[in-house]
Length: 183
Image (cartoon, rainbow, N blue to C red; front, side, top):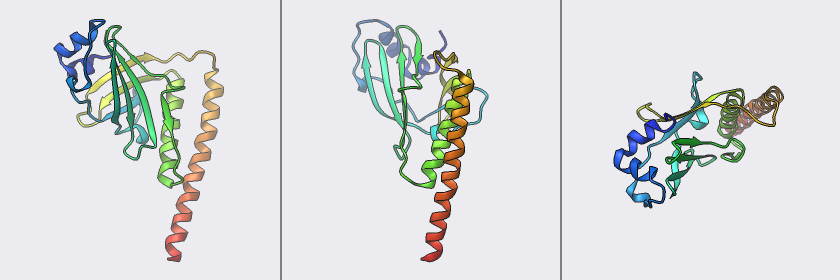
């Protein structure tokens, strides 16, 4: 399979082989450090909020590496599971993507970028994970086929949220500008 090809190259054949063997135990320190990653959709521009995520937690169990990655400000978190025995990359858009809002203009703009990502993904996007430093492809998934949702309605709802947060970013920027002018 191809979903984990870049991760397999990064980790090397020995570690990858051990991960593919069910029942083999590995310690986190035995696995090469995973670089900053960029999560995106094939043939789409990068999403600012998902452009440079750092692995904050890695759990290795039964040939799977469960990653929790976060933005530098830790307002965005993405969970990704690398399932080596089944040679699959697992991403759950419902539970594996978390965004917090600290009230800043930058936070609102990052939320907008994540909403654009979500819209692209639920509208049959192909998830890709890149090494943020070298731009090499680490992993990818085939087209997302949503279940139990109407993608058109969901996309319309996301568009409304994008408009809301774009407006909010402008409002926050104006407040900062007014505050700076009054100082």
